[in-house]
Length: 221
Image (tube, rainbow, N blue to C red; front, side):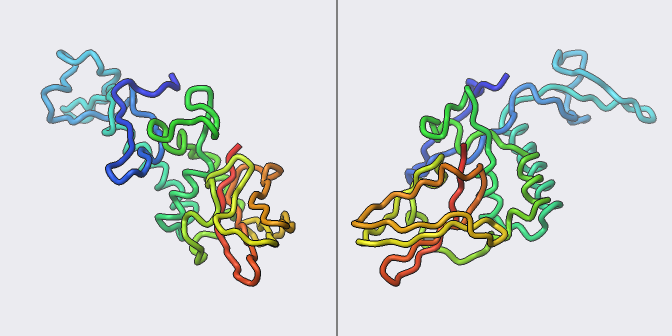
């Protein structure tokens, strides 16, 4: 339990992006069987674990594996998120997957996890719902700078600026707009330490000599 299934595909994609995006349960998942499929007859299938009789027909449940199980798990989790946060867009959902995914002894920590095996980590349904209950998604939909403006993203603490300037003033905001951190980098210093923040999604704003850059940052501990 908790390990990556031996048959699970890995990345990267042909264009170099890491894949998968997220890891989800896909081995020994119990679900309803196709009642018209001969292969799911309990007389020949040892994976059948239960049956419910309704009228003259018995409907069976059993263990299955693969993306046929993992994909519906993720779809169901996202449906719960959308029920809690109906305004979520696709990019917002992906950010939540990233910010609240679980990293453990199987995946490795943020600095060592193999993204082409685990993606952002293991999907966490509950923590995202908690964040939505606390209105932690108001940043979704804000116009931002390109993907590589600040890196790495997600981060476990340190963030670097892609641009270089002699002096850079920066501020970090909570999803509800509260100012959490601010500072001034001098003499071309490019790094900001967000290690004091809890895991979550924040807005990092930096002023490069009058040019303001704003980007959502996912912090993962």
